[in-house]
View 1 (cartoon, rainbow, N blue to C red):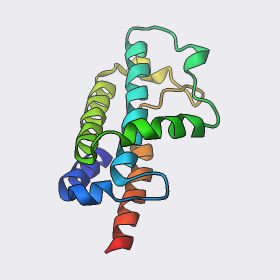
View 2 (cartoon, rainbow, N blue to C red; view 1 turned 45 degrees about the vertical axis):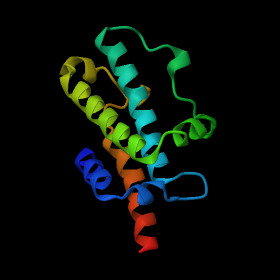
View 3 (cartoon, one colour; view 1 turned 120 degrees about the vertical axis):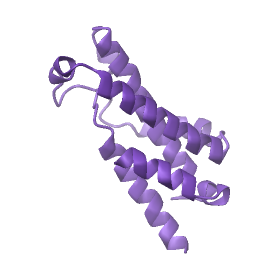
View 4 (cartoon, rainbow, N blue to C red; view 1 turned 90 degrees about the vertical axis):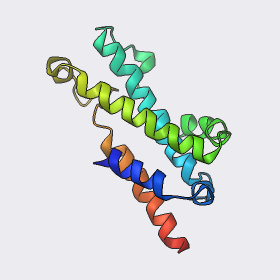
Length: 139
C-alpha cells in the first residue's frame, strides 16, 4: 500500500513541488531519497540473507542514525528532484519484490534485534505522511 502511495505521490507532484522543502533540512525529493537510501540498505542485507551470509556487527544499525542521514543529505540533494523521486520508487519496487521472493524460512529467522526489517511500509509511511503534511500546509 505504501509503495502504491509513493508511486501516486511522485506521479502527482510537479518538479517544483518535489524541490520544495519539507523542513529546514530536507526537500520532498530529498525525503524520498532518504527512504530510498534505507530501502537500499535493506535490499543489501536481504541479498546477504538470501546467500545465507551472516550479517556482521559492522552492518548493524547504530542507535543514533542522525550522522548517517546528515552525511548522506548533500549527496541525496545533488540529484535532480524528479530523477531522485523516480529513483526512490524504483528502489522501493526492487526492494519489495526481492523481499517478497525470499523464502518464509529465511524471514522466520529474523527477530527484533535483526538490522534487516523486511517490512519497509512503516518507514515509508512516516515520510510520506511528512511530505503530504508539508504539501498541504503550502496550499
